View 1 (cartoon, rainbow, N blue to C red):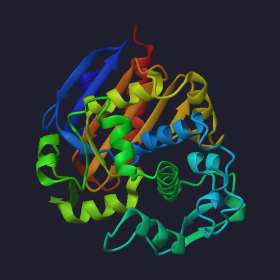
View 2 (view 1 turned 45 degrees about the horizontal axis):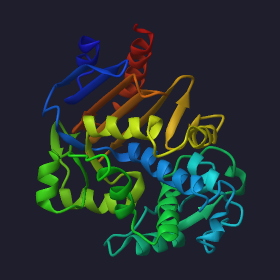
View 3 (view 1 turned 60 degrees about the horizontal axis):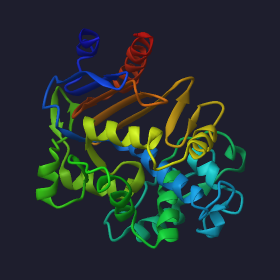
Amino acid sequence: MRQEINALGIKGSVLVIKNGKILLNYATDNTTDTSYLINSVQKSMTAAMVMREIQNGKLSMNDRLAKFYPSVPGADKVKIKNLLSMTSGLDIMPGEELGSEHFLSDEDNINQDIQKTVFSKDLLNQWYYSSLNYVYLCGIISQIEHKSYEELFRQTFIRPLKLRQAEFLWSEPEDIVASGLVPGFIYRNGRYDVVKHKTAVLDAHNELGAGSIVMSNYDLAKILRYILTGKLLTKSSREELYQTRSPLSNYGGGLYNYQGYKTANGAGEGYYTFLRTSDDAKDMIIIQSNRTKDGEFTYLRAQVDRIMAQLLKMN
């Protein structure tokens, strides 16, 4: 398995867990404790935070977006379960981007997003991937708890799990250094160019609960184990979260849900994260890199799927 992973040519850190025990933990570049921007893999954590509000009776899968953001186009038709499964019919106007060019606050970013949101009635209840869904979910739980998304995340995961290599990309420089973050690189014109931290931070603010956390493989595995088997959610809450998914994509709760295992992938700002986990979190593959190249992500994602299938068949 190590040879097959190495053959992918990914420069970064690798963690493979089988039957709850570490099978492989090594680095093809950087170290095993290096942290990376996990991009869209963060959606699985945001979804779990939303589900906890539902579990606690403060929110419902059938609550309408209009309850929290009435001025969003189509808000009276879009439900929480649509946002979680990317079946809301919402997206940003063509040519526009999430957030703002100059970050002021999460609330300001969401207000900017509202002005740029379009609703397609034909796409309601049909799967269409847009991080906008999860940005609105962040705003909703912040309204409910009267706390920022960052504080809620720290309160839910970082502090109770004593995570050591998990930080928001916009944290203080000394905290970012302590997390073990390495800069992201994108291959262009025959060389790897570093992504400027300032640019990545602005994009992270704009993505909020959909791509703003840096994390090591170990901390990522710890969080996923906590979400899938820990005390954060009850068994029935987990079932509801992951069964609320699009039948065409199997996407729900920030993860792609297949028979016996779940997947998530992150790409952006010069980072890759590939996560594969069994439903009980006992079998897991996490591969992260800070060197990316246009056109290779889809290939790598498929190859990691193939290796996960082998891991699940092992005794």
